[in-house]
Length: 232
Image 1 (tube, rainbow, N blue to C red):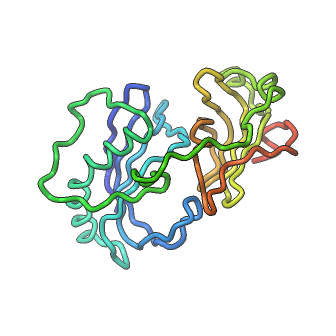
Image 2: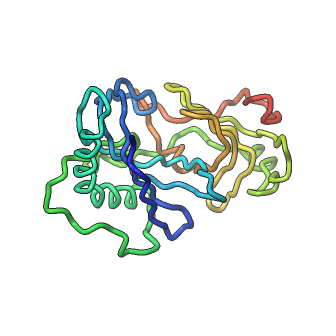
């Protein structure tokens, strides 16, 4: 009963995906906040390749639309109308947060005459709050950099080696790095979160993230390189 995706191309080759979904609410263990039960509008960047979605660390922003106890066609239709009023606000917030740009600026929806309520996001911080400092932990050591192969170098390896492990000390998210681009600080590897999948993530975004008690993502100092088959 969820809304069909709206995909807007970005200048970096990714797409901005917008969709409405129903959530049962409760505790969001990634953000540490309690969420309402009902319909939400999601907006975030994604990598699409050969019809498949690839993980992007910055998962975007979501805005609450309508509080309902259960899904229904009538409630979804109402949420659709409310989503149309929030799309522009959400798109601009995601573009600013991720330093992104639309490939076709005309894809940006026109400003709605209907006022949209404040945006709440899983990663977005309060614009009035000070910028988060980088994680004081050294995300990659010289030893890590010496062994991490470049992006794409293990594409033909059915069981590539995970060289570095990152984890959220206040949550269940874990990242295993198999390849790395030091110029863009872009990493490829296995991500265990809401799902377990191969994909890209960015060290700058890992460093900037803060969970409950302002704790950041950490590198597992005791992790030893091993094939991905051993950590799946």
